[in-house]
Length: 199
Image (spheres, rainbow, N blue to C red):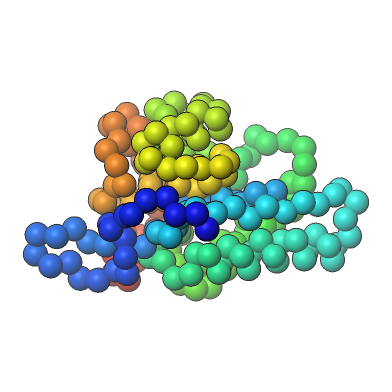
């Protein structure tokens, strides 16, 4: 996992002293069969895998279990996991496998009692660039510029943006974000706030 920058707004959650900001542990997950991006306090990483259409059921299961196990290990115990929602307009590829992987990871997080937020792809793009229709390259550029991060791929950039959105929703943004960008938070499926802040 590559370290991005020193962020002191997260560390293990603890009651905040008078006049200080609360601290939350938030993870961002951009789930993909070929390169799942993960962003946590420790930095960002990517889980690259490959597969073929003619792979057997066992091979497909092994691939998805590898991604799931790696994601849960990297995430550990956090106060909130922000996951990019499915892209319902995507065509081609392994639709069943993508959906299955998404639910495996959601189930794994829920089984650990981790509150989950679902961030639509357009909301992630709008928060990053101000335009919900922005392409991956624009989101990558915006993430690197705003957070001073060195990100090898758009998978890590997406994960970082998702994590930043979760922290912003909790009132501890990673950086100053224009109001037009922050409006994207309203279009997300957030968990009960008390379930997060009470952890």
